[in-house]
Length: 366
Image 1 (cartoon, rainbow, N blue to C red):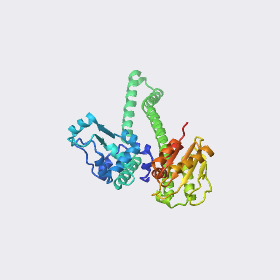
Image 2 (image 1 turned 60 degrees about the vertical axis):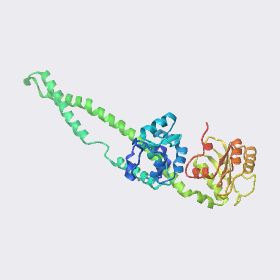
Image 3 (image 1 turned 120 degrees about the horizontal axis):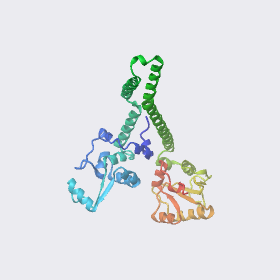
Image 4 (image 1 turned 180 degrees about the vertical axis):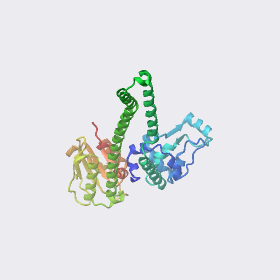
């Protein structure tokens, strides 16, 4: 039995399970709109026992995946028509987000902080496990094949005997040839094609199973690493040296090579020319990072960014520059980072990165 957290990490695994919408009602009865097909954002939030903001935030992060499973936003004439058909309040607003059962199931596989969502994921994995343990072939197929072969052999024998004439003209050698021909004909027409198809299907299933096993092994490793890394609160408790080493580990996890955490002093305050992590991205670009371990209620300012730009870009010629902090960035700091092609890994982005998401700047650009 796999951990339900695997579904949070693997889009391919989520895609393979979007057809099991029946598990939603097994966990908690769905309340649908009058069309019996859709739910609103508020209804989805109520089903999972979370705030509306949590669902909207999930849509922002995974909109393309959700749209592939039926999520859409109605506006204009389409919205007016839907309100009339569904007897909705005409004053519901200028747009309306709609979730299908598949979309709701998709949300359940993505929503972390919901007891209902975790129960849905557990039911999904139970259902998948049950399918894997079910017998792959119905034995009645072989009984039907046996009857077909008997009929085919008998038909062939009768046809050949009719061609050979009266019984007195038949001898043992000719009867042996007849039996061999009948069996060979039946096997050639039915058994061989069936075996070929079984071999092809078995090869395909083995290939798919190997792919799933590799994916599951990778995800189990990610889950184990996440448990080892701990939460964002655990990062807050690290000293500067440990924090820099953890950021170096995240870079290596995402495919970077030759990554080292420099011997920065504990505390990490000041030291405008300090660089904490050096290495190369997976496609060979020069990686430079500075780690700012600050209190969550502090901020990273535009001055901090400017100081890092001078060190990373001019001295180290960074092609991928990360300014990582456990605190948020001010608006001016984010603007300056954007202008100088610096990735501002603020507290929120750091949490996502620590939880398994990948930084776009570290992905191959070739």
